[in-house]
Length: 168
Image 1 (cartoon, rainbow, N blue to C red):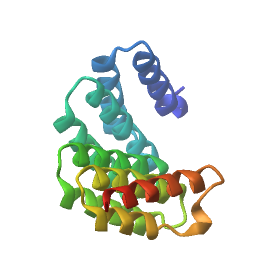
Image 2: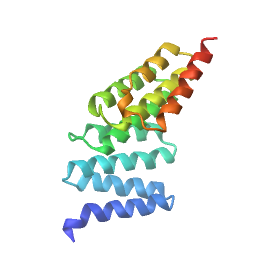
Image 3: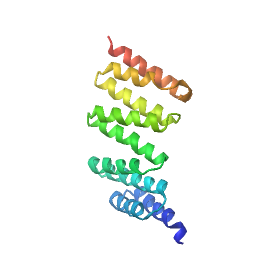
């Protein structure tokens, strides 16, 4: 079953992850990342290894793995997910400039994807929490309306309201 090698390794990692065996899952995913020739799969392996690392409390190691997923030279959903999570991690650590750069990279890499909505909202909420109101409003207002789902519209309205409350 050599043609199914990546798929089988990923399934093993997913099983370990689901059983909360995060150390084993991370190792399996890293093994897969080092063996696969498929660039999208490599990005996915690194992304899932980073998730396991983060659940082990290793934010530094997780961020490195997210960066490896992002660095794979192919556009993939895994790389965008890794980029969004890296931005969240950096925001939680108050590394605003780096998080802002990640947001810009998401907007550039996937300008028509819903990831722009999600990342912008996360960034805006973090900016409201740090009383950086101008950055919050900028993050909310730069999302193209065509990307908003019917569920996003009221959420964005709510956070614009929170922004206005902060001005008082």
